[in-house]
Length: 366
Image 1 (cartoon, rainbow, N blue to C red):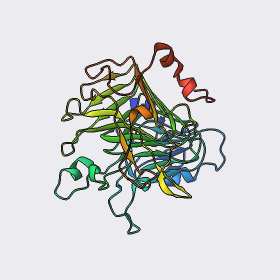
Image 2 (cartoon, rainbow, N blue to C red):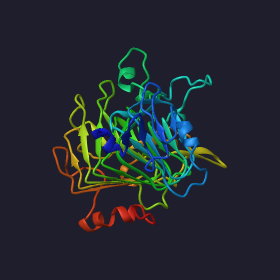
Image 3 (spheres, one colour):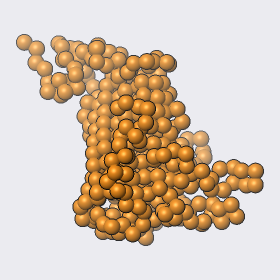
């Protein structure tokens, strides 16, 4: 009688004598070279090669099983309907180490926008039950002599996941997204995060996209060498986009060592654009974010929201954009960090109900 492992059943695999059958649930399998299992679906040792096997214009999910192990590679998802399914949420890991101030293989500094471990540049991507991380040790770097520091522009930005131009209808379910600074960059399209963990310390959810976070844990990490521990969001929402980042029924938690009242809910990021009279902060970016019925630990600052600098039209790089000039709001906050925040706006119950997943992700039936 053939024995079937519990893990195989959970992953949708049927273990046959000498062969693990991945069909029809999976179109490809990512596994380490030292994994002795055999699968009926094609197997790959690199995620980029598995993605390359997907149809260029697919119209149905191309499902890739990510087995247990750490797969170290920068990967671009440039084909539609690529779906990653992990064998273990904490054991199936897509990882890479890159930080803005470090030197890349081409001899130049990485810069923030080249650091992501995973770039999504095609629609209908999905990930479930795995970890996406940037392995740069931001805390270790900041605490060593001569290390990179965010408050002086030193370059510890290290993105784990970027939803780039071309991404839309991206869905993440029970995914851990981990880094230290600039962790998650939903910069384009619509995205849905359900029961995910996003960890970081400084602007660790940022960008211009439209994202809905449902029942997620948003974990702040300590910053012992900076004046404040950090900021959760830094949206750069276009002014004609009604929603930016909306958090519903989420938990804002803290790692050990994160100080009380030291983390702002967010600040408004205004990127620069080139104009005929120079390059400066683009007024079309008016950040939007809301926290609705979220539990907050005592690391949340009583102001709630704070200002952020940008380059003014006069060339002043420390021109300040105030949270009152952005679209920051909350409703129904609870927990030790909940307060009548001094900055930002309190939503009415009707306004909070209007920020539903269907409204925020308008046109996408999730």
